[in-house]
Image 1 (tube, helix red, strand yellow):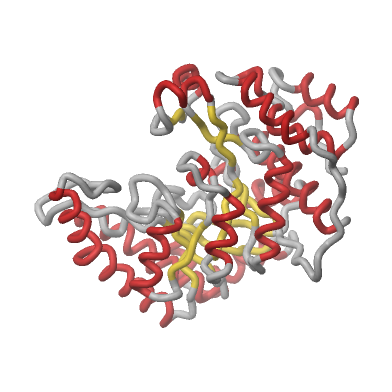
Image 2 (image 1 turned 120 degrees about the horizontal axis):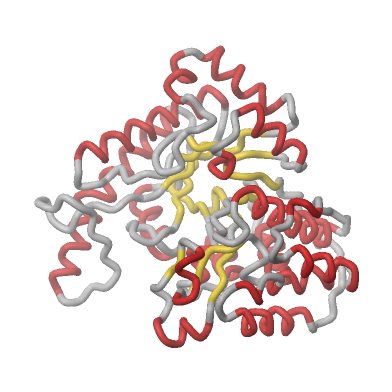
Length: 389
């Protein structure tokens, strides 16, 4: 059984975790973990009740069906932005991670990846990569989330340059996947700010959306895919994210069909939970088309009394917003039960997903490294249960 040091637990929840671990076995704990911090957030009693409902069904370790792949568990490096590269690698190695997703610029920044220096000299790039390999960690993906079709040409140029440099680094290091956003243009040639259009009425919105895709979105990504392909990178994992033109599985497939199979998903379920998607259905839908290239591991919790009043477009990013929020990000297992996450990981295995499970922690309650450790705890245990380990 994977365990966490007690001094890594937040004071407001450590006693709950200890009590649970002392009174129930591992499988029961995993099934109940979705409600561990229910009392600390709005709507907690409802969330806890939902977790208990899932936990009430019999828990049996399944026998692996066929040769299921042991998907590596990794972490996205911005959570360690206060650590040097070497200090981060020591931390990640000690936690038993097998792979990493590294930011090269854009919104994640490049705290641990001096992109310009590395692409200027292959020997530096290889020496940088060796630091990971010496600790048994694979650089599995490079991430440059940005807006390369921003209507402000200076912003777009910066993000395009970062993407192209990231492709060059990926080629040097034989990294096969680059993660990013689809971006969002303005609604007209005169706009100076992005215009995210999801609803095609009144009619002028349909016209703007059609213009976006025809004149900006598809032309850019056709060129970006061509450039990546020429440098040996054939997997561009776009995160389905609000405020960008690819924000759900349907818009992802729309772009993939227009551009080519270089376009696939960074399947971050935290953005799809609040849109009402069933995570297992999404994995089966995209996975059967070979369209999942990366997977962020991040959860979302709902506060039902606020959802009932305000709907789901009411997100909290800070703890000060939680009282009136409808939902917020959580570490894996703290929004939905570990039983559901077991089904999610099993679904990835069933569709033959060959990437990594990359923990991205943006939990305002279990902040920073603590959230990473909690997510890793759940993921390692459900993976072991699926594989019968």
